[in-house]
Amino acid sequence: MNTRSKIAVLGMVALSFAFSGTVTAQTMKEKTVMVGGAPMYPSKNIIENAVNSKDHKTLVAAVKAAGLVETLQGAGPFTVFAPTDAAFAKLPKGTVESLVKPENKAMLTKILTYHVLPGKFNAKEIWAAVKAKGGKAMMKTVEGEELTFWTKGKNLYVRDAKGNDAKVTIADVNQSNGVIHVIDTVLMP
Image (cartoon, rainbow, N blue to C red; front, side, top):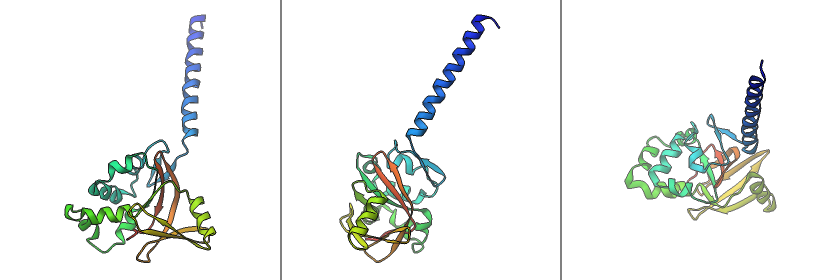
């Protein structure tokens, strides 16, 4: 191998190390959480991540129908309790189809904003609030009513105004404009 070839090979090796270092640094910088079979990137906003989750198709469709996409792409910060498709499937038959109709936009918006807290609250902070308040903590939603948080064993739960409990199944899915906590039940104001 002549000198020119050796220099070219060394250059390519150096470039590949430099490139892989950049990719590794980016990967290490962004600690993703898998939700619905897709990585959720902390550098992306709530909508940019949610559209990739195969478990949140109903929620994404509802957010679009309510006209909340732009809001949830905004600066926030927001804490979103994101019901899965299976959670929506627990609702009485025809409920989702009815809610996404244009004439029911106000009710849909009320339900969706009831799943959002203004500010960013990770599970540890909510857990601490529950402990500090003697076993239950109440937090006001963007919709205006409160959600009640409580724990059982190692699980965090949220209770809605109707007395329904949702379990947080995946906590602390960080976003550029807040955090998502996946829940197994749709909350009702």
